[in-house]
Length: 222
Image 1: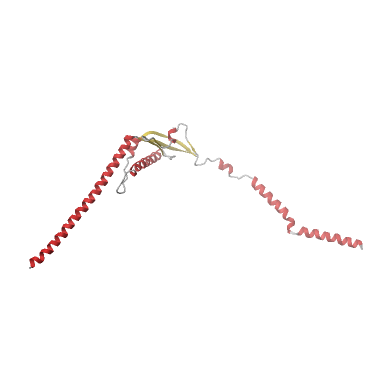
Image 2: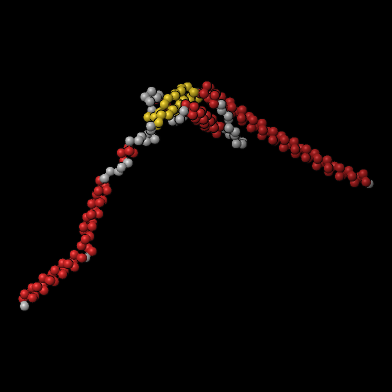
């Protein structure tokens, strides 16, 4: 009897162990361990293109030559007498392109200075833009020039820079042009007023003449 109970007990334990081994949770730790190992391997393995990307220089990386003058990086200066500013073309594909860009930027910079002078005046109407000649700017206002190369990534490009200085005599030239423009505006406004007064005078004469003729007609009929 005791041997039968002992056999029954061991059979129960064996069946329980088999059932526990068949449960889904029993393989969870092993699966989790394998998944964790995969994550570690993925983190450790380097990217295939990582070395190749580091070997290529960024396109925005600029390398200037050692002989590039320091005045190019100077900010706008205004001491109350002279007004100075630097204009650069930026990296360009050719010298011709750099020369074209420097002309556009120089005219725009001087135009901004003149527009500020214009805005300080009182105007009856919207003032016109004072035209500027780029050749006059290059001959009269440019005091320093630079032309050189600049390395942009793996490509060599070109750069031009100029230093513009507006002195009191140059400012008088702009002020004279502004005064002429104000005079034209006043003459135009005066002309409009005179033309309007003349129109009223002519219109009034016609009306008065018509009334006079109407008053004369009944008198003649009597």
